Length: 162
Image 1 (cartoon, one colour):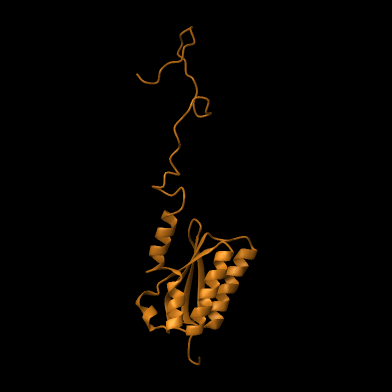
Image 2 (tube, rainbow, N blue to C red):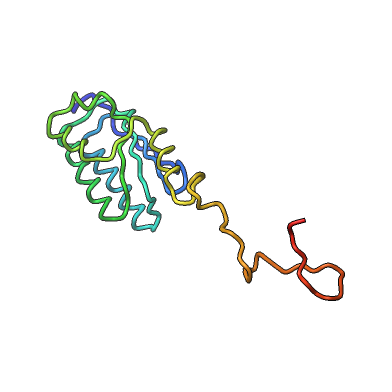
C-alpha cells in the first residue's frame, strides 16, 4: 500500500530460552516473510530459542492475508521445535477480517511482551519456585558428604547434631 511505513523487526534475547521480536509499522506479506526468513536463519545457525514472542504492539496496520500467512509461520515454527507466541494484539484483533482473527485465535497470545516474557521465563524448569534449583537431600556415599571424626582414637563418626 502506498504511504504505509515499512515493517521494522528488532530481535533481542529477553530471557533464558526466550527471544523477543518487536514488530513495528505495517504488517503486510513482505513483513511476515521477513519474520519467517529471520526464524529460518536462526534455525540454520542452531540458535533456536524454546520460545519466540512476536510483539505486535508497534504494528499500526494489519493486512488480512498477511495475518493468515503469520498463522502458517506459527505452524511451521512448531514443526521446527519453536513455540511462537503473539503479544500486544489486544483489542485490535476485532478490527481484523474474520479469517485473520481466526488465525490469531489459534495462536498462543499474551496481552503484552512483558507479560509473555515474565510468564515464559517463570515456567522454565529450574526457574525459581519450580524446585529445580534446590539441591536434593544428601545421602551417604555422595561426594557432597563425608564422615567427620574428632581427635579421638576410636575413629567413630561424630554426630553433626549437637
